[in-house]
Length: 169
Image 1: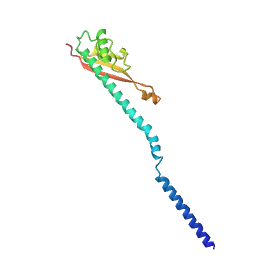
Image 2: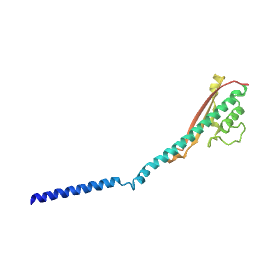
Image 3: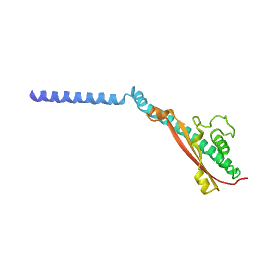
Image 4: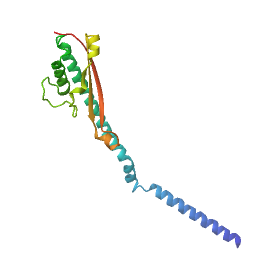
């Protein structure tokens, strides 16, 4: 009789284990909440990647715009007569051209936030030592809300430099 009892215990143990295995397999096959968990884990990362790539594109566009406008301003200075390159009025017009795309005052800035004309500088030392090359530097602020969301300063400053051979007219 003891042998029959131990067999019964063994068979009940096997039945319980097979029931547990069946329940675990059924639990693993169930996908009713899996999509919600996956979306909860992946969505913030996907949104950050999309927003970051959009901001990177905006920053690249702003840098390219600043580079082209500083190049235009340096070309403008390179075409002036030699006596006018270092004059205040010539530099003011070159600054306007770099910041607004126009020679006259009063235009809106090409890049939002780029309103300080003192950030566009003619390198006078290099002009004195080598008058055949015009060096024009600009510091262009670029603001982005993404950096604020990350707890960083929301303004990045691009430094743009262009050299143009002096050709005069």
